Length: 331
Image (cartoon, rainbow, N blue to C red):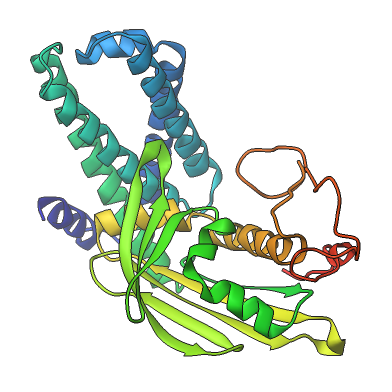
């Protein structure tokens, strides 16, 4: 609450243009801070461990290096993106992870509690700046009518609408092609529990409800409670010229509050590319029976394509579809 009051006061005492410049300057400062901290954690994790009073051992150094990589990515994202609100909110998510780690260290008998407490206080101060900057940048985006939380993507899949619908309708199939999901589990009639993967082993969980379900045509859903808002729908239509099925996905990650914004940044940063990637995965799973990505694919971490050693005698996948039509898509 105190942070929000400070941020509001700062906005009230400046013109829109001045506020925008100040927010951008603050974002740039945080970006360079991220890069500096990230380089230190990657190059000298042992020194960082000693400085903040935690045990200097292999496990700790590896963890600090991973945090350093996270800081470097956030810093580069802030400095290179003309609208860095999402990257600033991702720093807030990282701050939460840092505070959780320091809180755990305070409970240990092998740490210097004074140094750990000092480090935690420093992180809290930086978190306040991150939140203020994120709020200012988000308000600026809202005032200009811009939005990066809602995305619409399409792809053509070589199957009937019924096949595409049936596969998507089975919720435990979703993590097979939605890379940010760890699991989706039905919990009750029209309700399900979603778990998404975040940086540093973090997990984001929420419950969702199916809002409409028209067999072989469309499925819609939304989150049911909490600060994290997620809505989406998928439609299945016959593609023009008997080319298969046009799959249309609409997703929106709303942002309501600092923590929700941070979690939305984890799942929604560059949301359009993520959904395009997941739809390509969906196409491959439907047409080939598995995901076989090449180094040129848009995915997390390059790896060579590995097609199946052999196809069934009829030259089709287990779904009865022709793999040579894999490239015929529109995203």
